[in-house]
Amino acid sequence: MVREFVLPDVGEGVAEGELVSWLVEEGDEVTEDQPVAAVETDKALVEVPAPVDGTVRDRRYDEGDVVPVGDVFVTFDVAGEETADSDDGTSDAALDDENDGPSSDANVVESDGPDAIDDDAAEIEPPRNRVFVPPRARRLARETGIDLSSLEGSGPGGRITPADVRAALDDGTAGVARESRSPETNPASGAESETDDPDSSPDGPVTDPSSVADAADRDRTLAAPATRRIARENGIEIDAVPADDERNGEPIVTPEAVVEYAETQRRAQEADVAALEADAATDVSESGEFVGGERREPFRGVRKRISEAMVESKDSAPHVTHFDEVDVTALVAARDRLKPRATERGIRLTYMPFITKAVVAALEEFPELNAVIDEDEEEIVYREYYNIGVATATDVGLMVPVLENAGEKGLLQLSSEMNELVEKARERSISPDELRGSTFTVTNVGGIGGEYATPILNYPESGILAIGEIKRKPRVVDRDGEESIEPRSVLTLSLSFDHRLVDGAVAARFTNTVMEYLENPELLLLE
Image 1 (cartoon, rainbow, N blue to C red):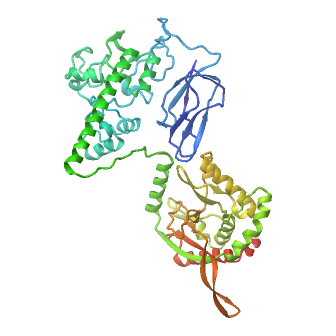
Image 2: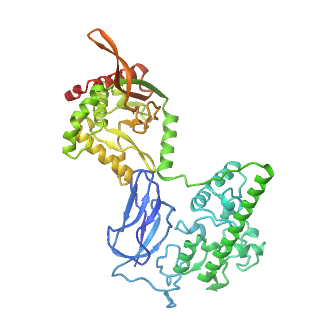
Image 3: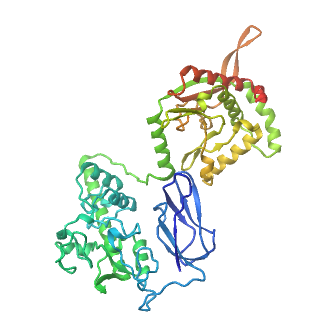
């Protein structure tokens, strides 16, 4: 029996994930809970386990595709259960629908256009100009009712991008999707569309016969699972492949037809790219100016989530940043004394645990910096727990692991947990739960040589503290009334806050409290 496996919800609020890599091949035997794919969400990289023992039957998506949560992305032949065969005995050519699953009618299921339940079958067909359309653009076109054949692509080789679909939607210049096409422009197919004339023949001629050779653009197609697999591997819509054969009055596509059509599309696209490159070369020669190249990458995953969070924060909260600097000579000495003890316990002691303890002490005194606004209820929520987010730079962008209940932990425990969370974030093995629930954030810009910053709030938090690099600077020191200039260790602080909740005076006093603890680290023993 064929078991369909949908992409599960791998984290609260996750709507889709990018398929980074397949960990199994079609035909592989798998056991329950064995990882089958690595999927990157906007929060983490996770491995998706198999739900059953069985054999991998069909991988529905390619690496790099974005898979919506709830969509079937792999199917299994379950061990010990029979897989239905077609009535005609040709198991290799058994006809199937987009789900590649058995049906009650001899395993032959028709792809019924807008009525099909599978996301692949419901996608808008490609335009007839032999230009590749990425899945994300197809999905957007389907959701907005845009007819892809009416668009001109702005991507390489005339590729239609999601931006092209959005532009057409904004301009109102694009046609509607195929459900509303008139019979005159509908290509020949084995079934009538919703707008067909009842007296018209399914096998009647089309307005533009030459277009059929490029893309059949049917609403329904019969094809064997192996044929559909070849189409997916080549990025071809099965309904677009010309079909010379029929079965029970419906067009049936063969593997040879898919390969031939894919090769035709490939040559056409290569010609389009060559033409664009020739045009670009002509433009350069005519203008006499050098035109640099471009590189485009999908804007999704962690990078897109960071973008959305930054825009939401800046749009929602009026940011103000308070700057100051603190003499941490005594803190440097204290850490140097404690480092050997920490090393004996296998812990790398940094300055961040000291700063975290100082921040928690200041938050207890100034709860406005640990509060959020509940805009729906029009209330200020004062959190009486202290979960400190630690902004961490990773290869895929900024992540904020969370130290839960930081005020209840000692320096070594904070240091150990912080080092572990940061390492997991950089290895992209951190769980979504470990990235949620912070009440205040600390970001260390000093690690890359920075002094001051204007950090953006980790919304809806009301405060974020940027820590600069500790530098030796000349300072005036008063010793028993005698002033002298001495080299001291100086740390810079940049506190951004939500001015709706926090007044400037409160922010300054909060910063002064943090500074007091950092100037006198022995006070942390009282916390």
